[in-house]
Image 1: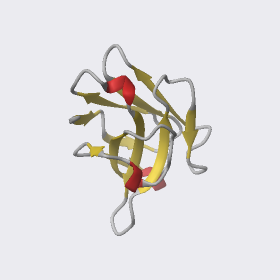
Image 2: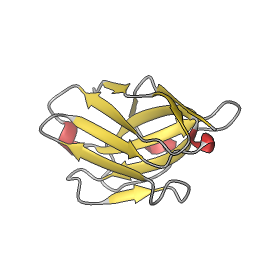
Image 3: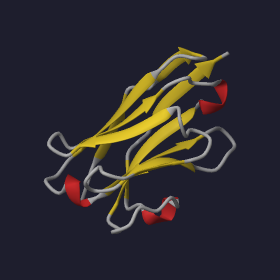
Image 4: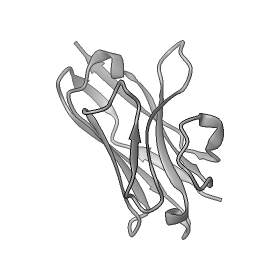
Length: 124
């Protein structure tokens, strides 16, 4: 069982940056692929970024590639999402998730544990 708690969301202006954090409980954090997803009002939850267990490989949705960076610190049981050059279309609730799969997958169904989400609002 893994419990995930996100933090770092807020209200920012277009062009600003934010860093989201997701703290995980348990001693097996390094055995999970970690992902970030987001869900805007009236839309389905969508993949944002993911990172493999060692942190050596990262994957991004096209919409955030070049602006967002996912990273993890296995010693601190924490995964981060650094978001730069934010645009209003990035407004959503952001969720971190943990997957026990060996390979990194982008579908939400492949993730076993979810945080409660943190709101990110980008004003124009």
